[in-house]
Image (cartoon, rainbow, N blue to C red; front, side, top):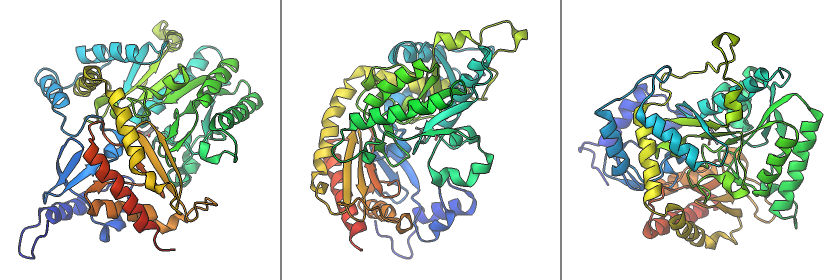
Length: 458
Ligand code: PMP
């Protein structure tokens, strides 16, 4: 929409107020001297709309949280109904129906053996809970020497200090290194790194063997291995074969080490199955959930674990074996109501089956990039599809990060009414499960154009 000089520009007014007082996440605020901020007034389905009435197709589900569309009425009405009876009560010493029902349904929906649910209110906090619980479990079992965590290279588990410590994305981590506990890094099974002629499964097994060697070198020191099952999302959407998880489960059992599955980004159908662990047929000792848990409506996270872990904390108070971790908004009823409505939406139609057609359409839509001189790989796990932009597709020579070519894709897409937010030079789709054929066509066409524009200059 064009606005003449004299007309009001509600976008500009909102942005001016914003820039006066808001400090945005994951942003160099100085960029906004030349990079326009997008103020959003409302959302509907896969679309967001700004204050001037321009619409943007949300191809990344607003940081991967939205599952069934913005302002989804089923979830909205559930939250509204809950609002009328109970907005919040602390969860220590008290309980409420939404948290009880949600726990029952999460236990039923997740892999076997995950029978206890502990709540927090964001993904990073769930990771902190899992790390603390694992360490504390071993302490309660009389193994205080287990104090270390194994994480994968290129992993990401959040931004709080504990979660950051078990991540390996330098951009977020390096600055804070002096503050962080040191974790043990195992080589990533990321299939992009495999040798020519090696299958992703063989590479995964080779990398699993290297992780086992690491555990052998640190026998008796390790509490848990933490992984993002199948897709290292913030680590440029790098993907790996489920064979890795099969091996990892067996290795963790052999070395009596916990396995923490961070399904915060990949859970709730993103990779094609309800939980990514299902593709390897494994149950972790801890599963962290957030993001899609509430359909993208409200902050909530859950850590599921086993009866065995629960039992290690269950004792007389004076033994001081209890898990005394807490967040004020733990198990908030409004967020639980949103989560229950989200599970209802999964139950109401065969979402995962319908997503198979959507996933195929996403892939078919970018087929033209297969021979692109600046696209090294198109990879996909269910509803996550990523395209690796490089200087030279044959040698896979990357673009220097300073060139910020992903930002050019972002800008081009915004002009075309699509919200794409590449991770450095990796352009990806992770759309809500309401995206239709026409929207997929717009999305894939825009991504191809954006990649052409961003890679045009040498
Ligand atoms: N783990 C993973 C795998 C994630 O992708 C994220 C968020 N991008 C987090 C943890 C952290 O979640 P939150 O941003 O809610 O703290």
